Structures are given as structure tokens and as C-alpha cells.
Image (cartoon, rainbow, N blue to C red):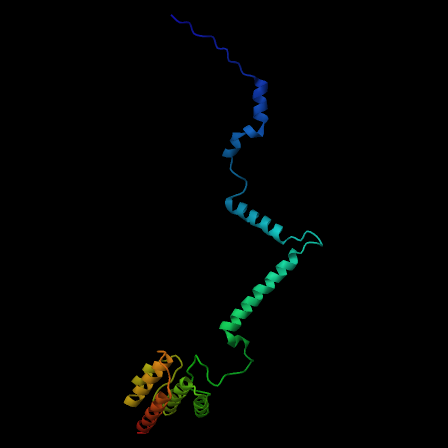
Length: 203
């Protein structure tokens, strides 16, 4: 029968104390909750980065000039985009164009003068608009239609029933919204329809 072997293991308390004092062996720290939550840690990191980027180290540090130049370039790009896509913001105060290209307003416009100018320049697109808007103004002044800026041309054809006005409206809409080319022949046709509208509208 085998005899149990004697236990020869012994604990070196001095060495154990050294291991416990060495931070490299402190595995319990992984289980401890951090003092900062994730958001606070992230905000602190961002603040450190911003502080490092925007801090001026001395008189020889030219980073501040680079930042100013970048800021000026950014502002210039914004101003250019506004000027390119919103030119009205840079117009003269109180200045109103006779006819805005994106607005079919029938008031405050000398249609005869604008039509003559458009025809002299060969701008048939503008001439088509002037003829049609002049017809709308004529109808509105005689209470044949109730003109409103938000209304569509088709709505006016329901208010004033006329084949000539319907044809004139369709011709205008094809050019204005359908990207059809405006020609001198179309302008003259609209003038003929306008004359018929006025003749029928007097009754």
C-alpha cells in the first residue's frame, strides 16, 4: 500500500507581498468601474484635441494665421454660394425688377413696354410670358377671374370659359413649364388668342 507523499510546498510571504505591491499584477483594477462614463471620457478627449489644435505655443507659432485663413476661405465659399444661388440677397434695397423670371405677377408691370423690349431682343420666351400675363391682368381687371399668385394657369381656365383662353393658356404652359421652345410664330398665335379673349370677354 502506497504512503501519501509529504506536502513540501511552502508560501514565501515576502515574495507574495512584492507581487501584491506590483501594479502590473493588479488584475482587480480591470473589474473596477471607471470614474468617468463614456460620454464624459469622449468630451474630455475632444476638449484635449481642440486645446492642442487651437493653442498657440509662442510667437513663432503660425498656426493661428492658418486658422484665420481657413476661416476666411470658409466665409468666402458661403458668400459665393449665396451669391450664386440666391442673388436677390445682394440686390439693392428697394429695387424691384420689372418682371421676375420665377414669378408670374400681373401687377406693377408695364406689359406693353416689356413685350416690345422682348420682341426687339428676340426674347420670345419673355414675350410669351408678357402676352399671357397681360391677358390675365385684363381678365382680372374686369372681374372675369379672381387672380391670386398661388393659383395655377389651369385654374383660371375654369373661371373664364373660353376656347381661345384655353389655347393661350396651353401655349403659355408648354413654354413656361414644359420647356418647349418659344418662337415668333407662337408669340403671334398668342396675340391672336389674346384678341379673341378680349373680344369675347367684353360681352
